[in-house]
Image 1 (cartoon, rainbow, N blue to C red):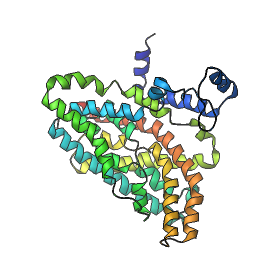
Image 2: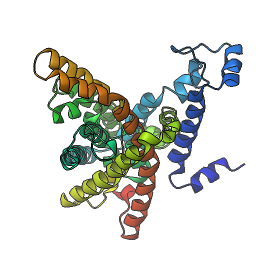
Image 3: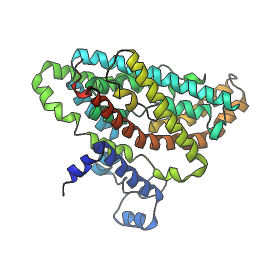
Image 4: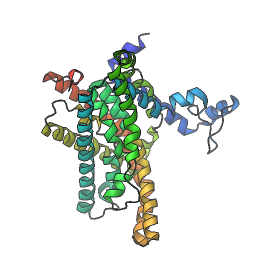
Length: 360
């Protein structure tokens, strides 16, 4: 049937096709169509906490692989990628990670405050976008997508940069930007992502046979964790006209503004291969939980007298629309970011820059 050849004809097919398939199936799942749920119930599928029946949540190995296994699969990918790195590549990965993390955060914060200032209302700016939604959406990148894209189009040092990029996961940096610091520096997040890469790098450098054994793991897990990432997306978000325009605007700013600046800064630091800049130009799925975390922190601040109750209520009121806008940006950048990376890879190759040949 030549399934593999067909998938490979699609630009970035090993990641894009499974991701879209996962998103489509999850969208159907979330519609909770009665006859599908009745069939699943008859088969003995356990209900979700909300009382629904979903074929991506049937339990066992199937759910672990296709729905909830993305983090485990990404960890395996990072372990195998780490085994192919030497100490020089590891140092370069750290450098790129720091450059990308700082640049993406700076751009997101600058655009967020500028948008709120120019529109005259940081809580409800142009297109209904708040400073909160912009900072949360633009500063928090999709680590799984970054790993997949750099694994397919980048160098090993690009892949390794995800260890530092993990620091932008969650609401910490958004809390810091909005002055609602309610958490300690997430050093454990850095360690938790770095550990698989570090152990893989140690084993690969100690024994070349281990390195050879783990080499296929740089490619094999990609379609599996891409599907699992897609299984966390709901394409039905695009049918909400009240937020879709703002969400797409947020996605375009995230991809093209943060991406372009990250590429520029990488070039300023004398990096010829800049594929990692565009690979990080996305919005993470967990960023959708940031508005709720901000509202919770604001409530605590109001309770301690550090913030007015009115301001805390304003953050609380933002949660539904900001969450929806960020969710749309997550889906849109998941489709847009790979396309930009593919074109940038072709652009680089025409100029004699092949990321896979990068050894330092």
